[in-house]
Image 1 (cartoon, rainbow, N blue to C red):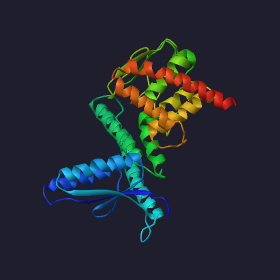
Image 2 (spheres, one colour):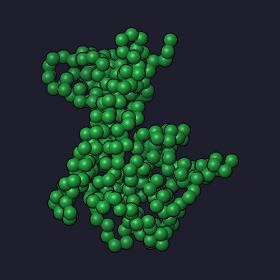
Image 3 (cartoon, rainbow, N blue to C red):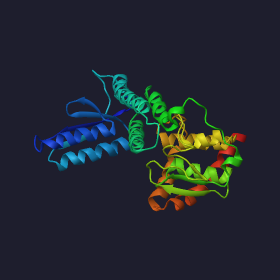
Image 4 (cartoon, helix red, strand yellow):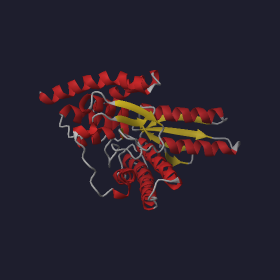
Amino acid sequence: MKKNRWLMLVHQIPRTPSYLRVKIWRRLQRIGALPIKNSVYAMPAGEQAFEDLAWVAREIEQGGGEASICEASFVHGLRDDQVEAAFKALRDSDYRVIAAEARRVASARPSKTDDAGASMADEIERLKRRLADTTAIDFFKTGARAEAAKAVAALDRGPDEGKRRHTPTMRDLKGKTWVTRRDVFVDRMASAWLIRRFIDRSARFKFVPGKRYEARKGEMRFDMFGGEFTHEGDRCTFEVLVERAGLDDPGLTAIGQIVHDIDLKDSKFERPEKAGIERVLEGIVLAHADDKTRLDRSAPIFDDLHSLMGKRRRR
């Protein structure tokens, strides 16, 4: 008997209150569940999927309904490859809508920073969140993802996206205050470590809200809207920093792949270290609300990881 590939939620929701059915439907959409029948939804088997479905089942039961979760394999009728294709079709549709929205926003971009510009920044942030949410439930790496990521990333580059960015020298990057969004996590943690370890040991950091922020004299923005260093195409900020600072280092390349897999949630490089590093960084975030403390606590982790990755390459 083949291993069960799916988790199935089977539920029965009472007719009243009427909002409960809509609430549960929206919740299932957000976690990426696939409707098989009216009251049957599927997810690829895994711990996260079980946790997500368990929360939905609990909501159904608290609303007076019934819900069961089971492991399943398709042995008649639907085939596994057909179910996988249905998941991909859902995400492809989501990505195409995001790409179309991004192109619409790009074509309507105002030429100056004004109230319209601020509204545009909000739209771009909304699209980034929508892309991240969709990527998180793209269980089978659908083909339309790259198109959506490219369209959204182009918004950060502005109307001159076709022009090559100025490649700074190390001298350009020294003595700066590096500005990023508050509540730092993996990409910003790793990028800050990279800046202080390989670019400017005396670098200072400033944390600001995620809305539009105009850099002041002596400031360099990273991993934020309009930043001098931020996501480009399907690359995370850490990868962009390594490339544009001209850092040819196998250890940094490996760390960039780990950070990419965690930050973009696409398992592009399928690094085996991903899960462990992600858990450690999540622990730091849970234990420390202060962004400076998060950078200080994560830096030794990246130091040791860099040493390990460099040694592996030299063997």
